[in-house]
Length: 428
Ligand code: GDP
Ligand code: IMO
Ligand code: MG
Image: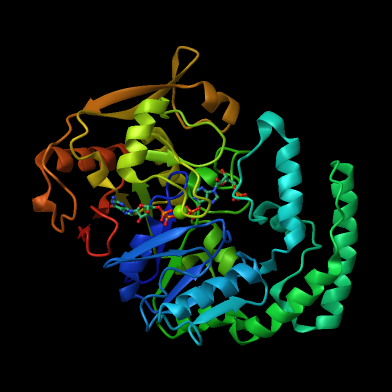
């Protein structure tokens, strides 16, 4: 049998499952950590001792000095955000230069993408998505419409300025149709992007060639997903999703490698569920109970600071995520948040119009109306916080974790018992 080398770590709920922490700790066994989709809508938190870092674009392998980090062609890059993140890491003593590679094929986010997104969201009424306002969707729109600017376009300042001027004109027309009064001025954008071009030049390369070379040389690659399966543009709760393929299927095209190089996929879930932004959430708790879970789990967005909506574990949604991603292993995080919270309901099925639904429904309007069916598991009073071995967990916590694994038909790989790197139980 072929030895398992390359590993994908993906979110298996609505994002914020704790992917950053898991990628960070597993990175030590890898040579390259690569992001393949999304942008700085992601917020990946890593706690090392009493220092906390939140990464948005830079892969979570950056804290291991021997690891190369790749931002692949499937990612949309806001150069200002990327430079800020590089500078913040440099100030913290983390070496980025020579270790971070940005694809020449990545599409750029420009300031007008944020303005267009805001105007669109404001015009949506009840169909508002509750985005992170980072310009992610409009940048992907320009990519698919084949008019977007790519990192490679930064190379020629004069041609870049001409393209920006043309694009700003068409964005101003669209904004005016949406009732937006102030026109965007192209000139400050041209100047700023000429400056970003200089800063980014040393980082830019054909990362598809780089990653394929590393693979050919037998190096191990860890693929870092952003967002989660239920935010995937095709398989999530459309239209309340992000604009990229956040599931494992996005890896080959988002990096320019063959699917056969993705050897194993780990899906990260919280021991309960959270969601930021709008859209259906069958197991969402009423405000008071949600507030208790939010306070215990510090559930506030790592990117926007918004309070996360909170609810119980949803095994129907997690099973869907396991199927679409082809999960080999399950990572369960934040088990410590459930310490001492009494018996724990888990959603084991949905009823719709009085009958059980076999599968996770593809239609968000149906999902809004399903009735979750719960099975309650005994809680535990002893602390799981900081546990480093399976045997240190109370029996009820072990049973709860086994229950989640059985429901998702996916063996447990890792259990996380705290935000800090070492607060982790590895089961393989
Ligand atoms: P990501 O986007 O999937 O990387 O997750 P976020 O960083 O947005 O959110 C996860 C939050 O939970 C962060 O604040 C982490 O520091 C924290 N966290 C991760 N694992 C654990 C855990 O096992 N227990 C607790 N209490 N916090 C955790
Ligand atoms: P990480 O990688 C949680 C959500 C937004 C919104 C929807 C669309 O930290 O798990 P977008 O700005 O992407 O167009 O917003 O997706 N969203 C996330 N929610 N974690 C994230 O990333 C998210 N990235 C986007 O809240 O509902
Ligand atoms: Mg996050």
